Image (cartoon, rainbow, N blue to C red):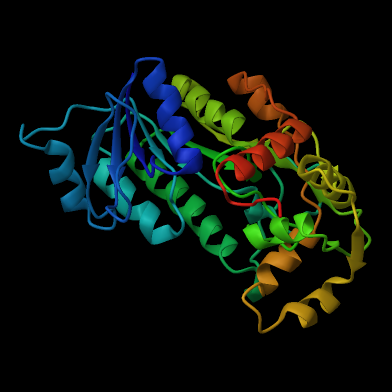
Length: 319
């Protein structure tokens, strides 16, 4: 299979690239040039401004002056409608299947738990920030792909976790300081009473979902992808303490008090704190049924192995 990946050099995008390359697919990664294009051996890497369709096509042509058709384009960084539109404009005549990475954040706050793909997408409150632009990118993709008669798949991961990046903390960010603080003996701050639900998706499982989607263009559609079940914030705090090798000391703080406590600090994010305090609980049955998606890593596995990666990578340390 011949695949174009946009945003294939970091974390989830890199996992997708690795999986396709390992099984021998013909993979091209289009890189924005903001970071070095570190890709597996045998993967072609080109650099272009994804907001400029002309430069994208020229980069893909290379020295040959032509672009061979791709079976699929996987767009990992469709952060807003204009970015999605530029990419689709660039590739619609060159690809047979367009796959976009969305987010279950577009459904928040949930009206159902667990939520499926038919969960209403409501205009987010201003403090929810970027998920409004993610919802916009999904809608732009629907409209443009329908106009161009281009099969569209949108995959919506939940909270991505796993070796390779700092996991989400209990304030809705990804701050190494949060985890180092636990190691240093500070209590684990948990929003409200700790009964809110979190549903991590292991980066390795999520990458498998993108490969499955590319393999099944006949199943084009919209899918939530994650681990099989949600866990409470209290249980997540316990898992973190166990993985870090410390006794869990938890302090429960109401969200409004957290906002007041952290406002004006570099840890402050109304969006992050309010978002994280909401239930995140989704069914993945559609992806299982239609794509054959079957997560291999539990939340417990992901937390333990991500913490181990943080130690091994020097992100956190003892003493």
